[in-house]
Length: 275
Image 1 (cartoon, rainbow, N blue to C red):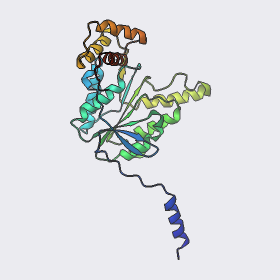
Image 2 (cartoon, rainbow, N blue to C red):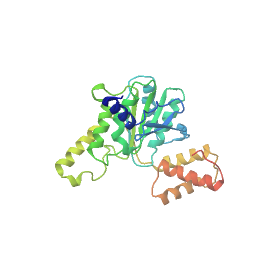
Image 3 (tube, one colour):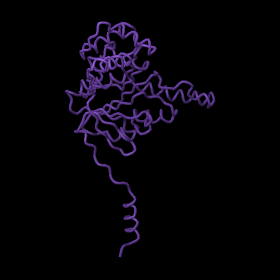
């Protein structure tokens, strides 16, 4: 006859969620993390080569150097890529990772959603101690939810009493250097808004490497268009004129606008593109 303690133990076992299977990081180099299930979903390799990104040579060198040191087990810094939208921050992060990962089998990239910042401490603890080295990428990071999200990220980067995991490099992109949305906290009063701002700015201080992406000037924009056109064999006699007209219709120049023009041109010419 079962004892009361045995019946309680069996009931608790039935109610407990199934144990998570260990992540198989051997099946890909890029992964998407789902904090609800703890799963790591494999993704295909990022196809845009690093040399296709023009006008960001200084930024390339900084990101590559830091990633190379991280992959080699040398001292490194967490990275914040900040600047105006469409300047290639996310593309550079993934293309630079692919450039280093081709010679570093243990290097993996895990992308997390910006709305799941609160789950980062648990994720970092899960990755801690694994044989792989992880670049954790959060695209378009900003603290829309206020100081609570900032505290979670700071906790992840500092690692609590255990310290930060030595095999994790956090790389974020943002349109704002200090990660704060405009007008944030204005409805909470001056003191509360100031405290939130201090909390959020203190998080940006945890990034040892800040890399800025300024607006793209016309020569750099045209150079990007020309580089894409040459790479994909898109030959038209009035390329520059058409590229400038496209940027005027879009109201600005950026790497994203250049790529969108190339996609339109490739479609017109019946040429396939990798993205």
